[in-house]
Image 1 (cartoon, rainbow, N blue to C red):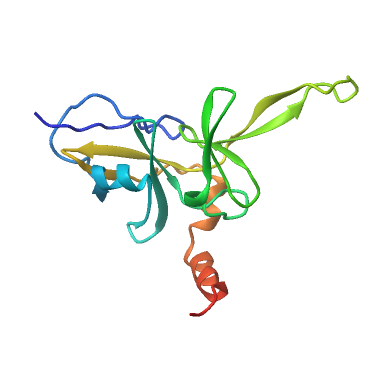
Image 2 (image 1 turned 90 degrees about the horizontal axis):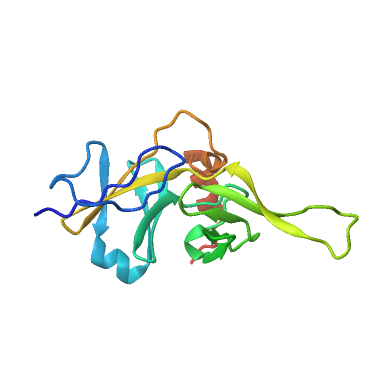
Length: 175
């Protein structure tokens, strides 16, 4: 029997795996690698379809995919820690500590409820969806990503251009 584990497809939905359903990858999906290799590495980055830098990560038995660079300032999310905030798993950008939910791509922040009250009380709030999340599918041990083709603009889109990649290459130190 096949072992496909497609994720939900809406832009704000989870890339969480679901039960097996067929033995071929979805149309318009892109091969990322063998699941066992991704599980071992925990995180891999790929240029998908020649146009999108994607981070695929394995955390707590689930595969997730999102734009590789943080929506805020282009930080390398593959170097970020994964932490839980208010019951939600997030990747924390290593540059400025922005918190991004793995499932929806929401930016989270800690808000002060009443700045005049002592001691200050805070709670976690959403900035909305900032990071583009992509669909992950596993078929017979192979992992595929289907790019989120929503026409809605996400802040992480800023770092998905040839111009940005060219500037990044210019700014890297020469060996």
